[in-house]
Image (tube, rainbow, N blue to C red; front, side):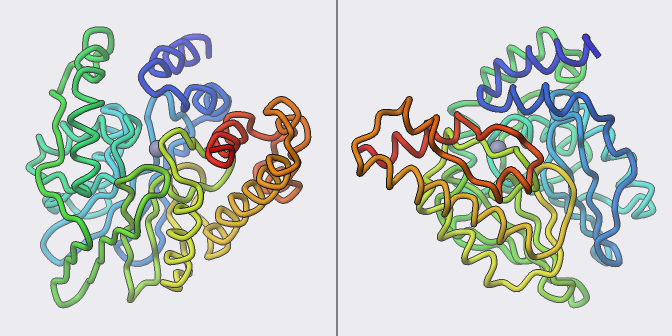
Amino acid sequence: MKTLVMRALSLGFLLSGVVVLATQQAKEPPLEKPVKLAEGVWIRQSNDIGKFGCNIGWIEFSDFVVVIDTAFPLGAEEALKHIKETTKGKPIKYAIVTHYHADHSFGTGAFAKEGATIVAHENARIEYLSKNVEKYTAAAKTDEAHARYLPYAPNLTFTDQFILDDGKRRAEVRYFGHAHTTGCIFTWLPKEKVVFTGDACVNGPFNYMGDSDSKSWIEVLAKVEALGAEQVGPGHSAPGKADVVKTQKQYFVELREQVGKLVKEGKTLDEVRKAVDIPMWKAWTGEQKMSLENINHVFKELSK
Ligand SMILES: [Zn+2]
């Protein structure tokens, strides 16, 4: 456990806001078995973010496989075993990176080594190049799994949407605007009614808001809701039904309402931190205390 937490902490330096989540998560063992969301559509939930990184999804097309998110190198290697087992070794043609954060994008090298093209929003590629390369190189000096690969930036980018359709399966990779980061993308399967969301929608207390615009994030989630997904593959924690997106959006709506009201009343950050209380968030996440980091972020946004 100690080793695990130490590792989470050292990676935490790279991830800034994710460190708290990583140490919380290390209490639970990773969910080793992939969950089948529809025929040929899978998600592997990672409960040890500091070690493995984010959840990884994959979609089987007729002749190839498309992966959603690459996690950390260790998470990528674990997922690769499951991907090969569940798809009878079909080649991985694309690995889609939902956004630049290390726990989603540091495993790109493992998928590139398998011959996959690494797909991301153009903003995520820019962010990867400016924020990740040095951090990856530093991590590779102390972490064996990182040292097995080189930092590998997304090499196929888009700005609006990217559609894969082989006649049997259709996946629409969509961009709806600034959410958790400026380059968050969603993979929508219209026939299976499954959406993979990255960290723009998580299922629990995993919202890092440091790169976000909370107003725009709510608008993005409204567009995701409008897709009409029946199943949601989140960036962290368990897959769920449509209500996961609704609940995620509701949290930001209530957070902005409460913080906004207190800011208008002239309350200080300290007073706001003490006053904000969102019962639906506590019920959803099982947390006893509100996320002060999230309150700080929204206070900063609304005090401008
Ligand atoms: Zn993230």
